[in-house]
Every structure is written in structure tokens, then in C-alpha cells.
Length: 539
Ligand SMILES: Nc1nc2c(ncn2[C@@H]2O[C@@H]3COP(=O)(O)O[C@H]4[C@@H](O)[C@H](n5cnc6c(=O)[nH]c(N)nc65)O[C@@H]4COP(=O)(O)O[C@H]3[C@H]2O)c(=O)[nH]1
Figure (cartoon, protein in one colour):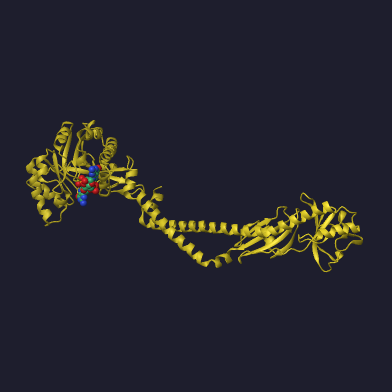
């Protein structure tokens, strides 16, 4: 899971995601345009196939109505002169058919042109036997010399006992260049005969089952009776070549749409997976990590307490430091909830792991805006309900101005057994005026003083800052002690520093390392550090 979400969090991966989104959007738009173009091409091919098939529909209608006329009008004795007369009259009808036979059982006895044959002409086995409602029988592409049309071929259709000769049909096809057509005569048993157009198309249609294959698309349209069919084949490569300009335009449109979609999606992803959004979505008891930085009594060298420092475990499992999330907490009014989660986690860990009989002062950072004794009493009740194990100190951090009701709340907290310190004194809002106005229990000198390199102004001011705090009579903690020399300097001062904290004593530790660091005293600092060496939470 952590691996998966890191894909969305890291900027490098986001670029890859953007590229993927672009490609997918581009392909999707092209697919959409392609589908639309194919649909349109298919429609226009179907239209052309139907228009061409109309010719055969008309032919079939003429044939059937001619048979109707023959059955109604040929009343004379078959093949008699009167019959021949009736037959000739029908042959003059303007229906494209003009040779008729009397051929009961497939044996031609007379025709419109050749009166009676010298004996019946046996047409033989029909190519198509009794097809459709009217039971029409057909002899396809027969030699017509027996009716005097030497060298000609035609199809004979028989509707017992009359037959008509259907001359070869040339269906006019008016489709565009990228289409070609074949007209076929298809029997119900699947046998078929080429009628006109480009041979081979129907064979390919049968092989491919219609639709799209090899860059070609085929559609079929048959006449109502199903005898004649027109297959139209569209060559899509030829179509693309014909509309190069439109293709270029479609590609450009797809690229523009894909770019817009990518911008939108990337912005959405960036917003959804931004640190701020992640923090707000996933801040809970499990994601809070507590680090404990030991606080040492300067006189005795004894570790008497710790400062609880919060970190947050991001969803990709990386531990994030407060400088990244404190402003998010303040901006979104999450300060109280956050303090509650930290207090809860620290209480669970310390209560479980701290050796029995060991008393500890636990310092927490709180936001000035949360200086409300009722809610703070509830938040830290886990500690105050164990007065023999824990003392609670709340360090009011330097985020915004101290609220006007601060004094009243500080006193109320003191009555509940909770002490307050001013944090990071010497910077920001923590000025002398604040210190004089508020009856806080202690003051923590900003780490910038103790950490300042030798001979800098801040380093020189360390002594004066310490003397100034001493003058207020409050408990004094100096943090940021990084070297033995600074520790010695603080020890050697005339003014009294009560507690020290800093990397020289210990970096912030996870609970296991912190408990190891708290080994029964007296043990040298070096020995304690060696024991706590594992599981250090980087500061
Ligand atoms: N270079 C150096 N640094 C040292 C040394 N000793 C301690 N530090 C660092 O100084 C910070 C001390 O905490 P802070 O002044 O209360 O300053 C804290 C505090 O204002 C705030 N913070 C941390 N945890 C919480 C919390 O649970 N609630 C609130 N409201 N604020 C918190 O975030 C600030 C920064 O915390 P961290 O990053 O943990 O940084 C910690 C600690 O790791 C040292 O010798 N050298």
C-alpha cells in the first residue's frame, strides 16, 4: 500500500502518471473519433449497398408480377397460336423481361419467340430448387440457344408452369472510390453465383463473417426475398488517404483534448495527494508518532523528564517532522484534536513501558489558542489520573499571540496540577512583557541561544538571557545543548539553570530507546547513550 501511494506522492512519479494520462486520453479520444468515423463509414456503405440492392428488389417485383399476369392472362390452350399471342402480349410489358416459356415440370414446350419446340426441351436439374413462398425454381446462366438466342446466357426462373428468362444484370454502383461492390445470387442452401461488380468480395465476407478485417470493412444488403445480395467493401486505408486533412485535424484535436484532460487530472491528483490533503485525511491515533527527548536536571545530571515531540507517519510510511504539518494544523483548526491524539499516544506508550516506581515530568507543546483549562484537563486526564507517576507540563509554543484569558486558564490549570511553561523564550512573541504578565511556572530558553556558535552575538547573549529569566524566579530550562562545552558553560554560570535539554544529552528517542535511556541512576551519560543507541528517532 505504502509503495502504491508513493507513486502519487512523489513528483517524479507524477510526471510519469501525467504521461500515462496523456497517452490514455489521446488513445481514448482517437478511439472515439475512430469509432465515430467507422460508424459513419459503415452507414454510408450500408446506404450504397441498399441503393444498389434496390435494382434487384425491383427485378424480383417485376418477375413476380409478370408471373401473376401470366397466371391470370394465359388462358388459351398451352402452346396453341392463341396462347402464343397471349404470351407475346405479355412480353411487350416494360419490365425488362421479354422472353417467356411454357415449361411445366422443367420441360420447355414453347416460348414467346420460338412458338412450339420440336419436342419438349428438358432444362435438366435446376440450380435452385423451389425457393421462397412462391416456390420459384431457377436455372442459372443457362445457354439460351434453344430459344434462338445463340451465344447468350441467362437465368431461367420457373413459377409452374410458366418460366421467364432473366438477362444478365449489371447493377449500377455509384459509391465513392474507396468502396467497391459485388452483387451475388444466393440460394437458400448457400450456393451462390457472381452477378456483377468486383469478384472476391463476397468470398471474403463469408471468410471473415463481415465487419472489419485487414483494414477493410464489408456490409451486405439483400433483396426482400433474399435471392440477390449486394456486398460493399470499404478500404479504410484508401478512405484515410482521401481525407488526410481531416485525419490531421482529428490527431490535433485528440492531442489538445488529451493535454487538457491531463492538466485537469494532474491538478486533481496533485490536490488530492498534496501533503495538506493527505495529512487532513489520514491524521488519526495510529499515524501519530511520539518522540521523547530526555530533560536533565543540571545539578544532579538526573533525567527527570522528557519533552514529547510529535511526528506524523505519512501514508507512504515516511515520518514527517512538525515544521511541515504545524501550519496545516493551525490553518484547518485541528489544534485541539492534534494535541489530544499526541497526549493519548504518549499516555498509552509511557503508561505501558515506563518502569514502575519511576516518576517522570512529561512536557507537551500546546498551541496558545487551546489554552482552555477544561478541555486541557480532559485531554491530559490520562496523566493527571496517575499523579504518583507523572507530572504534566504544558509548553505554550510560539505560534500565535497569547490569548487574553491566558492568565486565568494558567491558574486554573495549576489548581488541577498541570504546570505551564513559556516555550522558545527570546524569540517571536515570547518577550519579557509576556513573561512578566503571565504567572507561568517555567520558561524554556529558545534553542537558538545554546546552539549558537562561539563568539556569535546569540552565544554572547546566552548568559544575559539566563540571568534575565533567573530574575523572574521561574523554573528555567535551556534547550539546544549540543556540546559538552555548552553544558559546562551552563554549569559554571552564576545564575541557576534548572534543567537542560539537547542533542548532547540525547536526541529525541522512540519509546523503547527512551525507556532504555532511563536506566536506573546513577549511570554515566555515555553509558546511557550507549544503551539507548538503538531505535533513535532522528531529531
Ligand atoms: N538542532 C537541535 N535541535 C534540538 C536540540 N534539542 C532539541 N532540538 C529540537 O528542538 C525542538 C524542540 O521543541 P520545541 O522548541 O518545543 O519546538 C517544537 C514545537 O514547537 C513543535 N512541536 C513538536 N511537537 C509538538 C506537539 O506535539 N504539539 C505542538 N503544538 N507543537 C509541537 O515543533 C517544534 C519542532 O519540533 P522538533 O522538530 O521535534 O524539534 C525539537 C527538537 O528535536 C539540539 O540540541 N539541537
